[in-house]
Image (tube, rainbow, N blue to C red; front, side):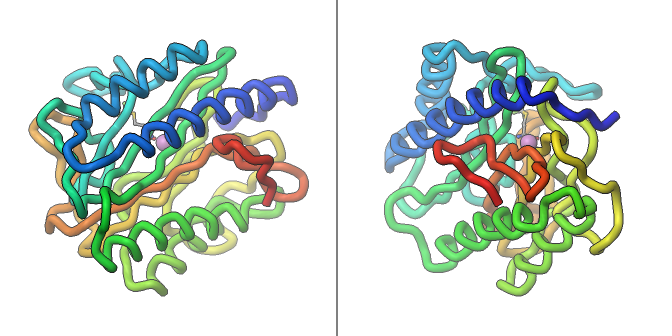
Length: 260
Ligand code: MF3
Ligand code: CO
């Protein structure tokens, strides 16, 4: 069921979203050669607790999963697309690109967001992949509004990515979010204009393009969580939780007032 959040629920999601934006920005600031993913996760866990929030990812066990997710942060390096477990042995190296994905519950409401950053100097291709993925999210956000359908979002994301020579991952998607981490509707990163459910003010959704430099096929790690490209090509991921407004949408997982 797709739910419409009340004004008060949106206020709480906005507060949680700001905390999450702070957490991700702080963790991104710690990314450097020699740093471990476990360290980044430990810092994220501390920051979430210090702000009176709760991790959404730690202990998360979707139906059919072999094990609960063991951390508050996903750290996905290079060919890892999403859900990389932040192990002690996962060390950042100059030139790597690192996806940082985090979710938290604050005042009973859930928010979810992700960014991808480079470690030191990265290749021109890696830089472009990060920029195109970030801007593909913006392109998706630009079409969100009460007159839009879900297919419009996927269409905007996919067209932008294609135009720039990259490919969207097809087996993973964005989602509704708010009372829990994953709610209806599913928000694919590809689609046809004018198809799918009509959006309405008060819907809260997480839009999350996952973009690869090679083929869209993915494989799952032996740990049951980490997802990487089958051809080992680079992958990037950006995600925002947004609320549909009368005029368009507002990004909730940001420091700034952000209306589109
Ligand atoms: N942002 C991720 C998603 O929407 C959440 C991953 S949950 C985790 O799929 F537990 F795997 F981290
Ligand atoms: Co998500």
